[in-house]
Image (cartoon, rainbow, N blue to C red; front, side, top):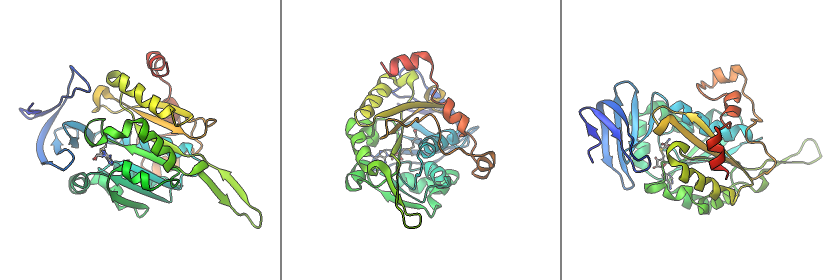
Length: 305
Ligand code: SAM
């Protein structure tokens, strides 16, 4: 199907049957098939630049900050000491840009499967790809699934910024993936402090956050993903934010912890007004964090039944 007609790109997918969101396009900046997917970068008329993979809008300059800030700050702010972070996917650099901002993050690794997405984002999407310039980052080109098999017990927080469950991201929603996430987190997130001569062991349990689709069109899939996660994590929640250029204008985040007693809806790291300003946060704040877990009745009934 020709998705580009008379200067408009239309997002048609079996993931949201019978509907399609369109963007008016000024110029195609890049279009090529990589080893993994169709990579398209466009200059839109009113929404800045946009990255489109396999015909699905991944981010636009207009509203990407909502997604990038939420998927990063939700897990980072419920962990007491998110020193070492893993990002899976995220080849546009937007999540790297946000993770690098968090004052408690000392280092992070990002594993993106498709080098073409990284290279072309650096060239055409610098407002997101500036995340790759962080000295805290080690960037790896490879499969996140395979990477975690070799890097067990390492991370405080793992963020999965994946594309939708078609193409290379299909494995990133399975039960096997959540099992791997669990084992790639530090066991009980132990940090040993040695104030003077005495030892103090603090237990900080690992936290994950994954892109989890929208209930409006992906209800069955969101439910399946949450169930897969619940098999390995005792505390699991679903949060939503508004992203106008995503299907139905909304995206969900699955947030989970290895600690069953943790309240994922309450940030332990609360950002002050000054920090929000200094970190250039345009969407995330502690009130949004809490409110994003408050769901409509039909979401709740369906998701947790
Ligand atoms: N914000 C977007 C959204 O939800 O629409 C997703 C961002 S997009 C940059 C996701 C990235 O995940 C893509 O660049 C894709 O190549 C990468 N990806 C997909 N499967 C992967 C895997 N198995 N390992 C690592 N990266 C993967």
